[in-house]
Amino acid sequence: MRDLQRIHQGQGWTDIGYALVCFPSGRIYEGRPAWAVGAHTLGHNTGYAGWSADGNYETSEPTPELLDACHRARVALGVADKPLFGHYQLGPTACPGRHLKPHLGEEI
Image (cartoon, rainbow, N blue to C red; front, side, top):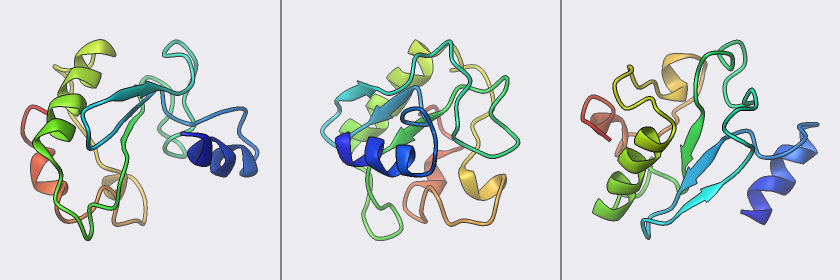
């Protein structure tokens, strides 16, 4: 989390751009307060709850624990019933990676 915080603050943000960060172990860490406007996707931060899955899912498969944590994060942020978008749908990136993209349509 400190590495992520350093990277995001190095971009001039006040803190981590996401409200929550889910880890492959199933743990969920808090980034910026959920009530604060995120800095997760340029032009799409207002009205959306930003959360992240830690790891490189272009090269790694998501663990069942990560998928469960992502679902719990969506519930905690009150967005479990809203469409789920990957960064690649809103900007030029591969995020969340080819192994996690197929799960976006599922209830994660």
